[in-house]
Length: 427
Image (cartoon, rainbow, N blue to C red):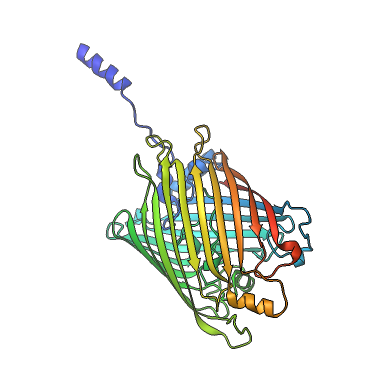
C-alpha cells in the first residue's frame, strides 16, 4: 500500500500533456493553401453556444472574416480630386471592405484520403472602385484529396490561385503586390476561375505544383469582375488557358531550425492580349510571367517555446513581357519580426521596400502624347500588426511612394505619404 501511494503521488506530480480543445477542428480547415487560415481558437466566437461543435460532429467546418482598410495621403497639397478622377489609393481618403465566408465538408469520414469540399463567398466594397469594383459572388468551389500517403495533392474547381501559389502574405495583413501576376491572368479572391491544381511532394519539404487555370480577363481584374461579378461564368471575353508551375522548398520553424521558404514559378497564358506597342492592332494570343521569392528566419527569439518567433528577411522578383503588360518587373525586399516582444508574442512588425517598373512601350507611348510619364514607382512601407484578442487584428502603417500613379502623373501627384489603417476580424 505504501508503494501504491508513492506511485499515485508521482503520477499526480508528473507534467500532464495539455489537450487542445480545438484540435478536433484541424481537419475541417481549408486544405491546399500555402498559408493556414486561422482555426477556431483564433476567432471571436470560438465555440460559443456549441454551434461549431454540432456542425463538426456532422463533418462541417466554417470560417468567416472581414478585412477593412483605409488609406489617405498625409502630404500637404495632396491633389485631392473627385472620386471619378482619382488616380491612386489614398489620393482621396480611400476605404475598402472585403468579407468572406468559407464552409468545408469532411470527406475523409467516407474513406477519401484527406477529402474535402470547400464552398466560399466574398463581398467587397470600395469607395474608389478601380481596384474593385464592388461585388458579391463566389470565392471558391473546390474539391480536394490526396493520394499515395499525401505524396500527391489534387484540388480542382473554381479556385483563387493567389492563395495557392507564390506566397505573398506574412502576418495575415501585410504582403507583396501581386499585380504583376494578376495582369498576366492569375485568379484572385474576387475573380476565381475554373482550375485544376496538382502538387507533388518529393518529401516533407521539397515540392512541385502545377495548375491548369482559366485565365482572368486579359484586360485586367476590373474588366473581369465587371463582366463576371458573381464569378460563376466559365470564362470572360478573350480569356484563354493559363498554365502555372511552381517549384519550392519549405521548412517550418523548429527549435534550432529556422523557418525557410524558397520558391520559383512561371506562367504561360493563351489569352488574347492587346499589344501595348500598337493598341489599335488586332489582339494577339500569348503572355507569360515568372517569379522567384525567398523568406528565411534570421533569428529565433524563443526557439524552445515558440520557434516561429524571431526576425525574418525575404525578397520577391516578378516579371512579364512589356509588350502585353503594363508592369514589366516588380522587386521587393522585406524585413519583418514575428512576436517582436515577449508581451506581444503574436504581433508583427514589417518594413517593405518595392520597385515597380512600367512597360517601356507604354511609357514611350505616353511621352509621345506629351504626357508626364515615369518609368518606375518606388515605395517604402512600415507596418505594425497587433493581435488584440482571439480573432481580432489591427494594423497601422506609413507608406512613402515616389510616383504613386500608373505610368503617367501630374506635378501634384509625384509623391504620396499614405497613412494605412486596417482591421481583420475572424469568426
